Amino acid sequence: MTLLETENLSKSFDGLKALNNVNITVDRNALTLVMGPNGSGKSTFINAVSGFLKVDSGKVLFEGNDITNKEPNEIYDYGIVRTFQNPVPLKSMTVLENILVSEKHVGEGILNSMFRSKWMKQEEEMVEKAFKILEFLKLDHRWDHPSKSLSGGQMKLLEIGRALMTNPKLIVMDEPIAGVAPGLAHDIFGHVLELKKRGISFLIVEHRLDIIMQYIDNLYVMFNGSVIAHGRGRKEIEDVLNDPKVVEVYIGD
Ligand code: ADP
Ligand code: MG
Image (tube, rainbow, N blue to C red; front, side, top):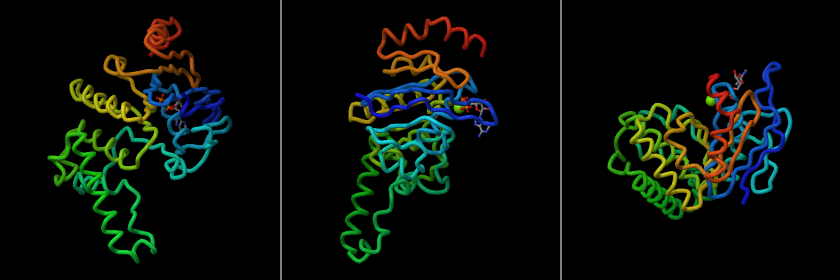
């Protein structure tokens, strides 16, 4: 079933077509991978879908709602959250604090602050939720350490943890395992698989196909701003990888 789809999404930078009528469908409860050589338009696509970049034409539909060119915070309210290529947690804060700041602050409303006991309860629930997420990511033993003490791979897990605090339907990730050692990269995708089972969908851009191929359900290949091949399911994905058009753009990379 379709969760998100784009219709002829287009974006130019000074005449250069970074996105040229891109039609991509993200299925519910699936991992959709967008791959392609450098400069294909992958990050532009992700930025457009998550509201960080305005497109020139075309549409983004999420659960049937037109979310084209909405602001990132509105898109986030629909249940789409993106993580960043270089995680940006506030480094002097602890791991737990980093998870907590990603959640909208429930105690901030005037009405809520008038009911202090309710507010306290909500704070407690948030901390409990944060701990559950840290436990799931196996970061709970580091909860009171400064996040700058985490390894690169743990930092990526923390970034996923921050996303989970928002109860997302779709997590969008740009190169989540760039610079991560293979063992830890598989660990990160083990968590992704587990989250998929719990009903979260993923839209991911990644270069390291050797590692990620076994985890994906849908594959799109982009080149020069256009989708040049796509496949859903094992058989079609293998066909895409053997498609001469795809092989050629990778050899030329
Ligand atoms: P990828 O993520 O696949 O490597 P990008 O989406 O980052 O590719 O870039 C696609 C094309 O758009 C590239 O030619 C890039 O130089 C250009 N581009 C991306 N962002 C900008 C921008 N903010 N201003 C001008 N050109 C950009
Ligand atoms: Mg990129």
